[in-house]
Length: 116
Image 1 (cartoon, rainbow, N blue to C red):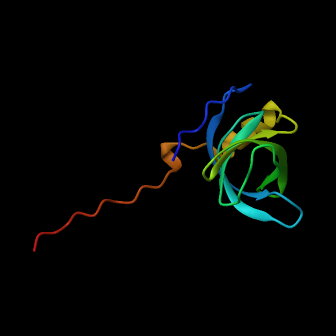
Image 2 (cartoon, one colour):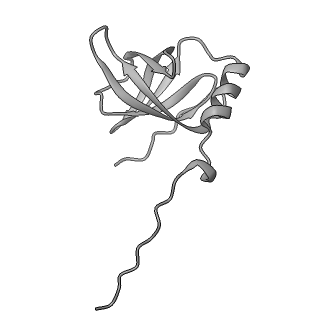
């Protein structure tokens, strides 16, 4: 897999994990997850085939929509620039509810192999 392309951003992105849906047309909606977000855009991972310049509508939670344009694609990840930037209160709410940290990432115990 190629490294994520360097893209100049208007604002710093914050790490989150948020399950979402990515709508590419009135009849095509696929599962997605947001791995980071800023007021101006986000990175999504989805199995939906996306192309640069494509309009998308990302929905999460109770149906809040984030319409935007795909700016880059790398395998199953894509950068989306929102049509309308989020205000600081919306970003703060998303981070409060979905910030990615070691405290909310489950870890499975390591099983040790027993000698026979």
